[in-house]
Amino acid sequence: MNTSRSFIPPIITCSLRILAAVKKIWGKRVTKAFPKQGRYAWDPDIMAQYPSADMEIAKIGDLLNCDLAAFLKKH
Image (cartoon, rainbow, N blue to C red):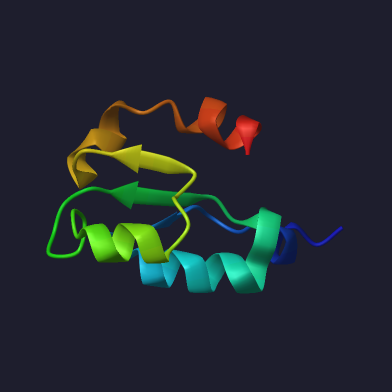
């Protein structure tokens, strides 16, 4: 098995539109993380228009305190 082709790292962005597009292409192989910061993070229209992420954090720096291995096992 070629692991370079089978591993897709988590996608982290404050754009639910981008997360939805990536998930549409990569499906269950990708884990979506959404830092709720930035211009679109709290927009109710955007929040209603796109599916939620697999993981939501308050800010990007919170990833330093996440147990990423445990999270990836769940997804």
